[in-house]
Length: 466
Image (cartoon, rainbow, N blue to C red; front, side):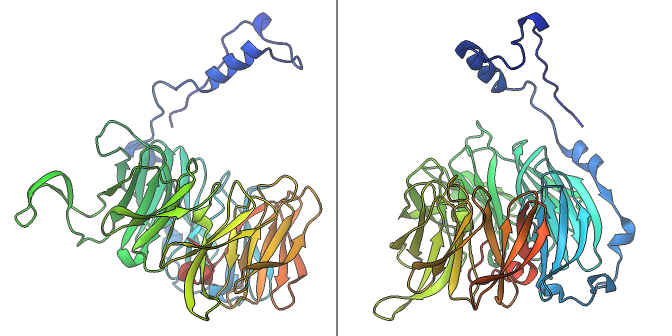
């Protein structure tokens, strides 16, 4: 592993005494030092990735059926809970609402692990680049590989064969074989001109398209990367004749197909058909609708503030005339606002005022209600708002003690109960009865930043996101 150690070379006599306030020029010097570009850039390539792989060969051959370790729990109604307070993961029985198992994890896991299509395996990404494959039916770690140095997130292909890892450092997308997390391909993330590299903001699976879709942080492009071995060739540069393949044609399998944009796309949401993505740059006031097949922007979205489209949800809503419309709602990282958008016209249906800026929004197809938080608000981060999906009004609040954070609601398989995270070291999973909208139970947890139900996640049912 390559590492960079930064030390202050000034003599001790030149260092400000502990506890003394820094002068303005010292603050500026420190800021300049922190943002100094590291040269040479840290390396994490093919050799480093391959050398990092660890595989439990015995775990590769475990029976393909739920084991006695699950204690009779429905494997499709399990929850995986990421507890960053002490770097552990819990497995919950969604019927009994009890913890089955708890095990140590890598440092600083991403709160949103991804499941294999059959729900047996779960894949964790840590912020320092480690990918972990875990057998949920046998409660065993299968393999681990470090795919980068600073990882944003990961996605699992709809056929269960591939894991794609999106990195901030180095600027790469890494393809791993889902069976044992062995390296399959490194895709350098460079713009169409080839003169600028980019961090990857997010990557998600588009199963009906047999592809991954990635948003780039530093260049205005969206990439679609097919995992279909029969994918059409991708063209680069000028083409004289498509019919006779006269031009620069690349094999389409795991080769980026670019959509060139005028604005950056920081995160995005798939429409139900997967023909379009709805995205917003966190520096812009307008969102954009991208038509993936046409590789172009087809509409603007009126999205004030800083919408978190990656956490958007959809449902069927009846307007005043009784006409059923498919809508999407997104929380906002900068304003106390939920934007509801008609997915046919891409026009706003309503702006719902909330207590403060929020990060997560969740619902379930069997529930009339949706939850949103105000966790980006210092004053109201302890409050959850419950929204009626037909009236589009806030109908109730659930409140934790002042100063605590209550966020990230997920539902049981049938939607009967919702689980909210009390995001504290001595925190809990707060279980809410969806018939009475009241708390019925707490399951202790150490800063539970993320929890996902197997069935809701792999089916991406109404009211869920990626």
